[in-house]
Length: 178
Image (cartoon, rainbow, N blue to C red; front, side):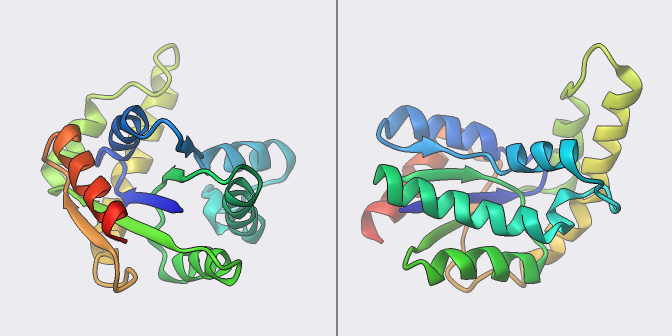
């Protein structure tokens, strides 16, 4: 079983997955950003977004499938994935392996996202880098909001302003029913 927690940067994906992990000890967490960081060490990412690399998308799908096949455990994936063709490619590859993605999307108003992003420190010892990351995250808010209408039909939309415990309850109910 794969539980993909999607949403804009600052929507609470990691916080929700941490809450789920505490309640679902057999689940493993896979952060696809790690694949992107490795790729950045090996190849140039011309657009600055490793999701634009076909290899990233392929490796993410293969990694998720491999975790389920090898370890027979649920996989929790906190990752913003809103480009419709990329969603189709990654989820399609997972589906082609005979696995289902239970997809959740955290909806959060733009002003709340901005406040959350501004309140985070990504690289505390490098303020210029910290500001570049914040700007990058904010620049993607509009694309995340627009993606709501293009996500798979079975996407479960969550109120990202709710607390992590309440959200985890909703996700776990859906997982148990699905």
